[in-house]
Amino acid sequence: MKTSDFHFDLPEHLIAQTPLVERTGSRLLVLEGVTGGISHTRFTDVLALINPEDLLVFNNTRVIPARLFGQKQTGGRVEILIERLRGDGTVLAHIRASKSPKEGSLIYIAEDQESDLSDFSVRVKGRQGPLFELAPEVGTVSQMMRAFGHMPLPPYIERQDNEEDRARYQTVYAQRDGAVAAPTAGLHFDERLLDALRLQGVQTAFVTLHVGAGTFQPVRVDNITDHTMHHEWIEVGAECVAAVRACRARGGRVIAVGTTSVRSLESAAAASLTDDRCPDAFEGDSDIFLYPGCKFNVVDAMITNFHLPESTLIMLVAAFAGYEETMAAYQEAINKAYRFFSYGDAMFVTRKEGG
Image (cartoon, rainbow, N blue to C red; front, side, top):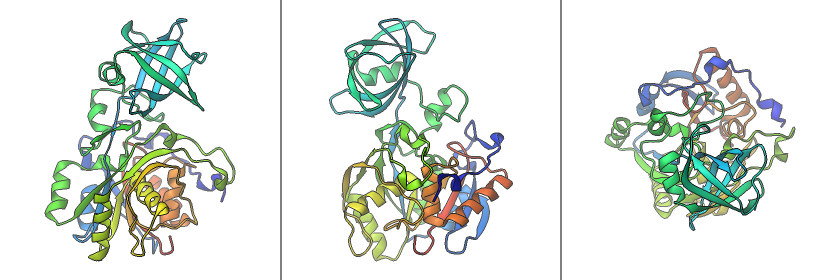
């Protein structure tokens, strides 16, 4: 298939720039993969769509304030976007500057592009492809982010981050620091809705996928199979595997909250899968790319937001629910003025047979 097959015209005013007052206040488009049927409801109606025997799988990654501003020793201003935290205190990061900083040079950290410099600094240790390896020189990276870090809002949100984003561009169940983009399907859940699901008897489990900036990387090839997928760190633990196994035993569905949960479960399945469609535990990097024609081994339904045209994420949804069904649902969402992307509305999607 061609990348252009996944294009759609989106009016700019449908790109959500701010979150709704209530997390659960969004609309929910329901897409039946088997029939292609579409219905319109509210997000709180997931209570009627999820059965007690089902399993909801969430991504518990936490978005870090990964955008930092600074100045090179030569005086040039830079913008740093941390891509990955490493166990030794160093980070891998994208750096935007008029001229790339040299290996061994210092970058002094500031509150923003206009502010005076602080005592914090990092040293450029080297490069790994497009990423710079940075080591803290004065202070720790955690201290720098707490003092001066900005929430890394997606490029289509055309405003500066604010205090509201620190809470709202984060799921209420986030636990593990490391993401530079939110697992946005989870943003619709609040504690009240989670409690209602538990009272209904719905079981939950967690995976971790630290969403990287590559999630916004455009597909630059004509044939989608020529696309090179970015790597992200994933953990599917033994507890989650046991929950999937129990769900299969009671005849329930595995419902992934977000494409990141889908990619986590299917990455684990690609590494090892048992006869009852249950993966083994998995930890490591994954570059799994799910597009029409790919088979889903674990996930039966998903909750997801509306994604960018020609992105790997809309390709994943099309692989899951069917290409024609997905593109028709997106056009219906545009016709009905749904809000798109990270702070937008959501879909509840069931798997097409054979997907």
